[in-house]
Amino acid sequence: SPTVTASYHSQGQQLGTDTSGLNVTATMHQPASGHTADADATAGSGGVAVGAMGATALATSAGATTASIGDGVTLPNGNVEVSALTRTDEAANAWGVGVGFVGVGGVDATVTAGVQTIASLGDSIRSVESRRGNLVVDATGLNQNEAGTTGGVGGQIIGVASICRITDTSTATTSIGAGTIRGTDISITANQSSQYSANADAYFGGLIGGGDPRATTTL
Image 1 (tube, one colour):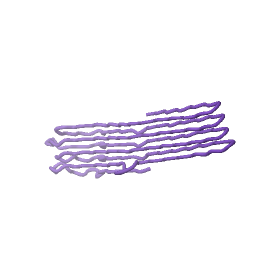
Image 2 (tube, one colour):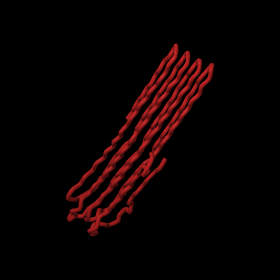
Image 3 (spheres, one colour):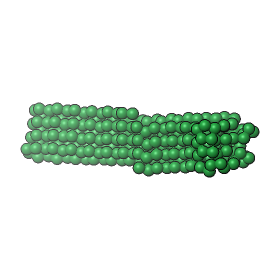
Image 4 (cartoon, helix red, strand yellow):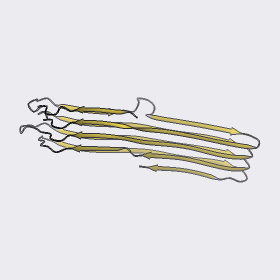
């Protein structure tokens, strides 16, 4: 699981007379092309007597993005920003076809995401009375999840299961310890956004048939 960390932890460091700012930024990005996690599975079979197929695809993203300023730091007079940003894109797709006197099909696509995005300011933070700089502490998580299954069988006796699942337990949190903080504008924010698309299809044909497409999402 990838871990991205940016931190400033100089306890007792005096930055109060510095008019410049301080930026602590940690970012986990999805690739420029493709997905953070991508899984595809295809299965097919056919026969006079029995046709059976099964395809399973699993895509998982985990890890942590953390930005922090440690304990006992005196903030500079300029703007201070502690920012953690996570962007992930997970996709799982499964296809399957089976043909025979007895056709049994099952396709399963599962996407799981569980990335922590954390921005924090430690205890005993201080600032001089004349400080006018802004303070921003922000954690933002942006997840895109896609799961799709297509199952099809043909035979005299048929059973097909087409199941896709999405589970996203990702979190975004910010925290500030005890201390004295002065500034013109102080912003403490956390935002976790999870977008999802789950589609399950099943096609069958025969004297006795059963289809069971299911799509579930848990956030």
